[in-house]
Amino acid sequence: MPFGRNPPNRSIHGKPLHHRSGREKASAAIRPQRSSPPTETLRAAVFSFRAIMSDTCPVSPQLLLGWSERTMSLLYRTVWKDTTEPDRHAVIDLALEYFSRWALDNPEATALCEGETIADGKVVTVRLLDNDSGYGVEACSRDERLSAVWSVTMRALATDTAVHVWIDVDMETDDPTQRVVVGGPRLVNDLLALPGRPALGVNNIVADVVGITATEIALLVDLLRSADRTLPFIVVSAPASGTDPLWQERARRIAQRTRGIATVIVLDETATASFKAKLGPLAVWNGAVRTYVPAPLETEADGWRHRYVPSSALAGASGAAAADRIVYAVAQLSTRRRVPAELRVFTGNDRNSVDQTLVEQVREELQFEVDLAHDELADVQRELARANGHLERLSTPAGDRDHGSMRACRA
Image (cartoon, rainbow, N blue to C red; front, top):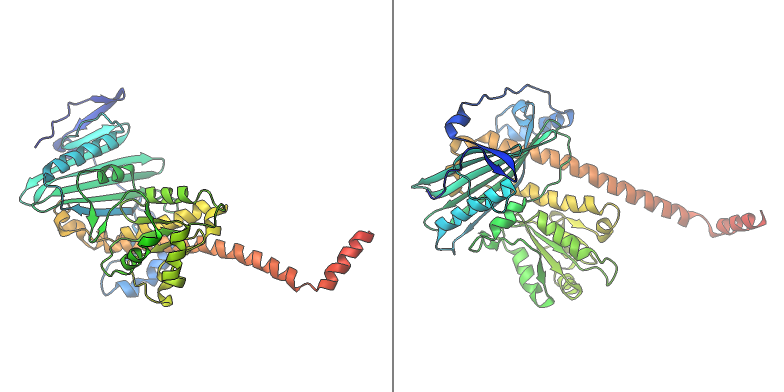
């Protein structure tokens, strides 16, 4: 293999970096985990799903809820492949080099070798593959922050026909109720810059916002309605002129956090008008944002599938929370994505069993729905309070309001 082995006790930025071989790592003691009961909210939610799960997933609620010291969560998954680059082995070498620079936070770092490396409290492991299945690398970075451990795993494989890339972001915590900020790591942006044209099915993977003009609206609508579409499209419409100067910056931030798992489309005022004329109530306008998931988009009855966030929610005091919900929704969809068969050489059949896929998906989906319901309920309650106040003012007879004003003046 082309990767040189790192010397032991190398330093990064003047700090010690320790490398352990696979044999040394295997001899390390494994810390036992203590049991702790799950939260009552998740217990009730999972029990309500037992009838649904019993036919396809005959597992206990304890397994679903993860009765362990920490609760593992898959927060983000991106998968793509490229069939255009002829020197696929070189792409894998570059992928490991980019991962090493990102994991060690050192733009001058060289590719890490197989085994375990410890730097600044971060544990980085690398496994190389070179057999009949292909030429590839699996690299994982685990970083403990306060009560949580964040894990980013990259798997890249060159076969005879393509380069396949798979990146997962996991988080385990002692506090399952902890709110986290979800988004793709900078590593995804680095890997998207590798030679080639990354794609998932018929959709290209892009790292930045995509501007669409009025002349391209028909093409956009055809793409949104395509049964072959594999990625969510987050469409950001232009507000009325001068009413929200930050709308494009907001779109860029959403694109940064959803790179690899969604495409962010920006429409100017003319394109927004054309989009509304083409899709009617299924469109988005006046500064609002709509997430079009890969689902039917033909009649008004399909509108509920594609979440609509009005400009008032984005530009107000709750704008950051509204943007978080947009990102959380597409990130949650990404965690359900099936791993391509070519990349399963890294996991083996045991890692694709029920407790790694279906069980984790159900548990995460339940928690996501609970969090989302709380946020949306708060928004509805605020709107209802404003509407009730307005209704009360309208229902007061004009004469009473005039008499009140006169009495106040006499006083």
